[in-house]
Length: 306
Image 1 (spheres, rainbow, N blue to C red):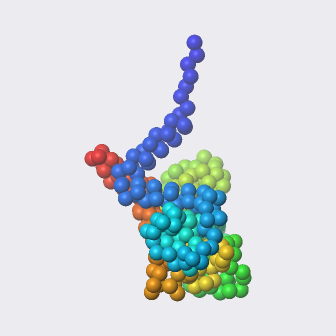
Image 2: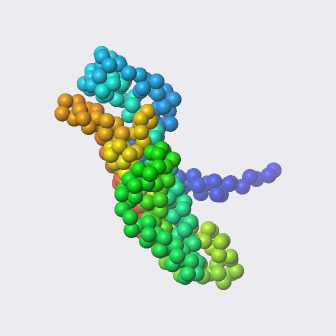
Image 3: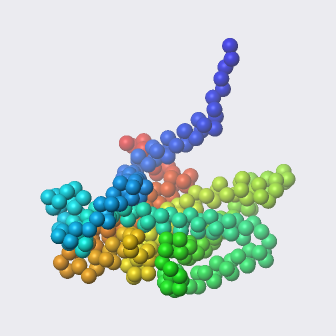
């Protein structure tokens, strides 16, 4: 008879996942925020495939139709815009571009900023100073003003918007990563790896990066909300994504002339922005506690009390 040994890494991964799930269940606000964000993500993925025709179909007889009027169908529960298009369908479809811009900008800035921060924190002083001066140059310009100038010069497309917003957020991840690396490189486990002959690349990616990653993910979750608000601001100013493409910020801008007699045109997409931003902030606070061994006991105590 042969005995099968259990898959230790797989069991450890499942145990870690169950622990995080239990801590998420202990924080009900974070749990509700996670559920809401999952719904938004599903809308961004499935919405354009299912509701694109309905969101672009015009009906001038139903222009500025008030909300909660179900005589026109479920899609008009939030009302209709100035061209008679259902707001609910348009909000669901607009989630794709809004989430795409925010996720693309955060991902690009996280990857580039973290890579430069690792180099600046673990390399020789000359290269580190050059990278930090680059970050200072980027930070010397107000992020929104830089985006306005660049988008006036270039076409306001999704790609250009992601690039501009990503550039403005790189210094945040660069400075955070460098500060973490400068502190971690002096710890005993790094010195032990050096004594054992580990290469600089192995030390950075095997020993330092896993310690820095939880902090970067927490910042990225919070930064996602900031980038989404920045995209909404640019769209509200008329230099973001242009029709026929649509985002929540553009919907708020399009409803601005009708605020006195059709408030729902700007209210519902604005509410979607507020709820998504609030959910991201709540989830970021939960991640900051859950990924910090010094504060994790709060959630674990809440789990035991439940």
